[in-house]
Image (cartoon, rainbow, N blue to C red; front, top):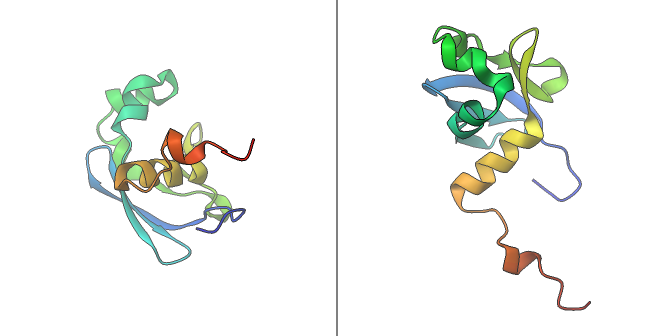
Length: 101
């Protein structure tokens, strides 16, 4: 994804419990483990307590998020960041340091 472009999701499916297969509108495919967020944030408690809810995931309006129900979603930006971190493509703190300052 180019800097300044907003990630958009074309399709999402469940690969394993709390692991999603996301197809981006760029045709890139990411397998993303969302278990860390689901376990750590209270908002995702329904996914922890209802195993059938995970299978209901779908792409939200305009591809800007994924949704499980009317009150449970995850943004495309968050998923893109997780995909980058999990693939090792995220910038390290050293790479973010601006030597010109």
